[in-house]
Image (cartoon, rainbow, N blue to C red; front, side):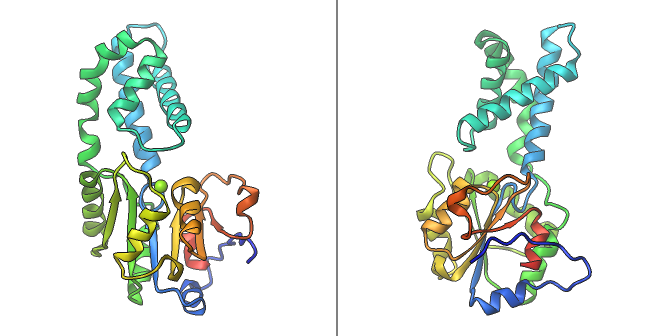
Length: 253
Ligand SMILES: [Mg+2]
C-alpha cells in the first residue's frame, strides 16, 4: 500500500462507500476527541478562561491576555511532555499555574480555577463542521460504527449524547478510562462491541500513539490518520497508513 495524500475534489461524489466495499470492510472505528469533536479548541478555551481568571489575581502590569496565553502555552507544553495523554483538566491547569508562577500561588488559585472550569466536563466540545455529514453518509448505507475514546465514562456520555442530539444517530461507544492505556487491546474491545475483528475494520484517529499504532498492532489494515497540523508521518509508518487533514477528506478515501 502506498501512503495516500487525499486530494479533495469538491465536485466529485464521495468514494468512501466504494473503498469500503472493495476492501471488504465491515465497520468503522472512530476516535472521538480531535477526530469527530473539536476538543483542541475546547481545551484552548478552558486554558484561556483559566489564564484570564488567574491574571486577575496576579495584579501584574502585564496585560491579562498575555498572562492567559502564557498559561495556555504552558498547559499545552505539559500535555505534550506527558505524551499527549489526557490529564484531568483542573490538575493540568494547577501544574501550568505552578510552573508559570509558584506552587503556593497555584494552591491559592485552585478554588478560582475549579469555579471557572466547572462547565468543562458537563458540556461537550463541538463537532467539526463536517463531522455530521460524514456520520450521516456512513449511516446511509448502514455501516456499523463504534466510537472509542480515552476519556472518563461520564464525560464520554455527555459527548455522545450531544452527538445524538445533533445528528439524530446513536452510536455504540467505549470509554477507556484515562487511568488506563488506550492501546491495541482496547481497540480490540471496541471492535468486539460490533462483533467484528479489528482486521475487518477501518479505524480513524488523530493520535499516532493512542489510535494509529495500536490499531495497526491489533491487526487493522485500513488505518486513517487525521493529521490536522500537517506533521510528517514517521518513517516506520509510511506505506501503512492513509493520511487526511480534515475529517471530511475521509469521504474521498
Ligand atoms: Mg483524539
